[in-house]
Image 1 (cartoon, rainbow, N blue to C red):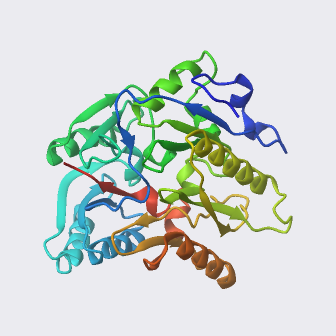
Image 2 (image 1 turned 60 degrees about the horizontal axis):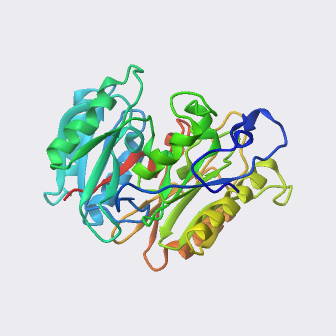
Length: 363
């Protein structure tokens, strides 16, 4: 474990390139410039933003229906690849059941993964409801519509938007809302963060985490085959002191490399919580082993709404595994009902419910 604002170079080696080696988790302590906090995974949003795409209209439609049924507002826009006619038909189907809570934008974006290009949302402090949005500085990669979206969203919702001089995907982090954050070591590698390297060296990383409102951040290993390296694919806070984490079920009985990586991640998160004087209740959610050529399937990449929890499901998996996974998620979220959403079409592109839905918190 590492405590402090600098990174041990050994913790930033290309872990995926070393067969059979599980990198140790690290903990970075940082001091936010004010009392800001990255919003918690379990905060219930008054409004949810979704992107219509012709690539998987079915799952997006099912998520949209559940958002409206929960009483939340729904904001909708389309990606540039979807036809105006298909988008209009989708909107018409939802309008009759929206109860006036559907807001339709004519702006387009490049990708449907709203969690990643959307603004990073913070509280002004642990108690305040006031919002601060951060706009990460994504490199020029041909996604001009995605890059422009946080600005017009902030203007529309009358929220202060502050530039963050670092490229960050929203799904890369999870947060307990009280200063405890988690992201993966491999995500740092994807962003080119190496000791003394650009765009961010180890010493500056602590300062950037402080800007996000993180007081203690666990840097943990994640699944080998998961290409985004986003932590929301393996874990999620469901309460101030309760965390769901994926647990691989395979023939090696928890000794496969992925299983050991998740165990190392859990230990790192516990250590980060301990650094803040907290303890965590961690609930393991049964997860199938990764398969060659397929993105790992996640049951924890869900969305908390006011009166329900939306959980990813995969009909091709065994019913027994799905029952165990749902029971674990239900135990984690408590008394609110768990609603399963078939996301088989989405997972092939690398994400699930949490990746495609962004709760909007405005003043």
